[in-house]
Amino acid sequence: MNANCVYGGKEFEKRNGSSRYCPGKICYTAAKRSRQKDVDDLLKSFRRGIYQNYKIFTSLLPSPGMVKKPLTDMRKLGFDDHAFYRAVTDDKKIIWHYVGNYLFSILHEHGIYQIIIYKK
Image 1 (tube, rainbow, N blue to C red):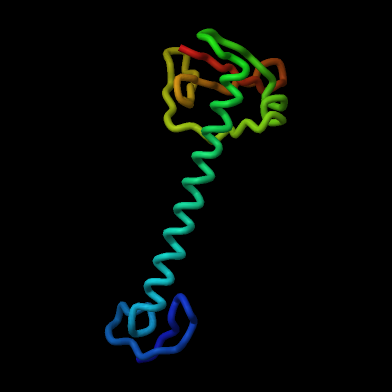
Image 2: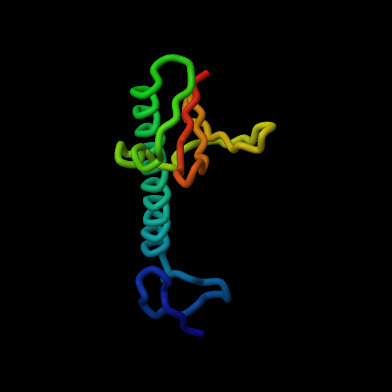
């Protein structure tokens, strides 16, 4: 029974029903390396986003307190809505996202999306 290698596309004879790569380890190793690079790039992008958010929050709120800004203004500064590492919901059903020692929440008030940044 013949099949095509999922990495290189080359036709090969299957040794068993689950064979997906050419015989030998070349295509398998290359595919595994490619998958790992995709994961590493994703994590690098995620870390970069969290660090960017942290720098923005630090510049806007260096000491404990709270600040509210329009979301469009924050995005112009490089804010990434999805760069946080944990989310919790408080008693008022507001979802707070963690970035270091900062929390942020995005609310829709008076037709405008606002971000509330809180530092403990």
